[in-house]
Length: 216
Image 1 (cartoon, rainbow, N blue to C red):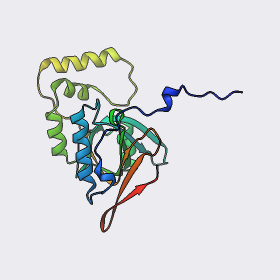
Image 2 (tube, helix red, strand yellow; image 1 turned 60 degrees about the vertical axis):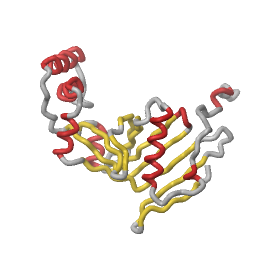
Image 3 (cartoon, rainbow, N blue to C red; image 1 turned 90 degrees about the vertical axis):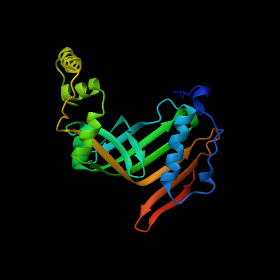
Image 4 (tube, rainbow, N blue to C red; image 1 turned 45 degrees about the horizontal axis):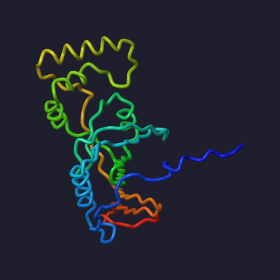
């Protein structure tokens, strides 16, 4: 059988290489300074989904699962996202409180990887986050039973629409809340068409953050 080769245009990495990334030549001691600059630059140059995160979790047996979530914030405290505690990721994090997050920006050939322990944020903080959501988003969260079997899609839509139409602020569901991934490993990657990609990994040690350049 003849091996199937991908079309030539699929063998290239798209995006720009015209980026000033001095951190690869002179890594700062604080990875969050790099992270802050990367996120700000991604927003500035118009990356389509700068806060889309591929979040990987695993159950108590180590069986992994993955999904895309929205980072509500990403700073020195960690990566903040929201979920239902009864969802697959919520259940897995309750059994195995570690996760890995990946952000890939095609437009600039950049990739961010973070991994570490995940903890629920305080109830009062989750209340504030829920209250800040649009009424329609609150209604969707109240009407939905995330990851449970859905027998009546039309009924779900009708309930969410009815709650939203009332125009009243809703109470946060007890199992809805924020989760904070506090990274102990952060890696910055910039792709190159010659496959000599640049990689810079930071690891948290008892003495603080260390950094290492990695082969592609």
